[in-house]
Image 1 (cartoon, rainbow, N blue to C red):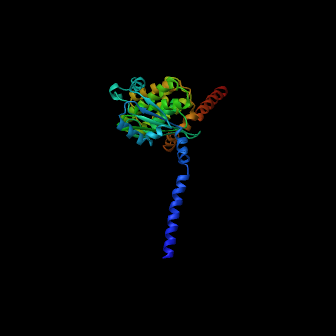
Image 2 (tube, one colour):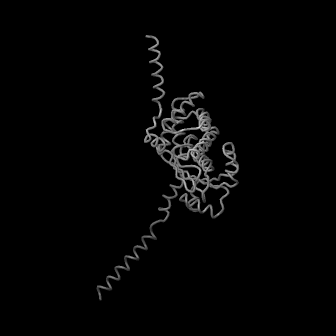
Length: 302
């Protein structure tokens, strides 16, 4: 009996000690780490979300209303959607409500751009990644979500707005326009080809050639499109070629850094490499220089 009473006293003591320890440990110490992490989180919410839609979107973004108190939160309006997208897709497709929402988390150098989507039907993760790299985004984890299946075109606008807020700098208008056109062009190509991933890889590979080799003429860009499509065994119509060429005409003027593109859109370049697509990079440029001097040498001694 004495042993039983002693055992009960021991259990009681342990319970009291555990409760006391929990009361002594400051809860702020746990939440402080969470707050620090959220301080690098920037959120753009669709301005047209209802309360229930907002709750769904926040859940998909991995956030709560309390979390938002420690994040930087902005809104993307339907008017802004039309401002950036009207030139590329029909008004009816954009609609009258801004629903796509985005979470952008600032990351360390060499992280690159990583994209995750939820309830997005028109744009793939690779398409967002490519377009955001064209816009100049760097080292961020991006999550795009809709309360239900939505196109997600507004997600690009929201991501760029969130990134601008994060850096304190406005993305150049021509970069936003090129990124928007790239997203829409790639999506439309994917629809017509029946393969969104191949469309994203094709546009990314052509962009690589145009940027790394400094292509500016219509003829050179057209040749780059044909060569890339042949390498990937993709058959393009004249209209599709013209669509890609129009996009590259904007991209060629952005002064993009090919190394930065490869760093930020690692997923795309890894896929192209696995497909055996020969990317130009600096090698293409120096190869052309070598060809020039070889021809000059042949002519001299011919």
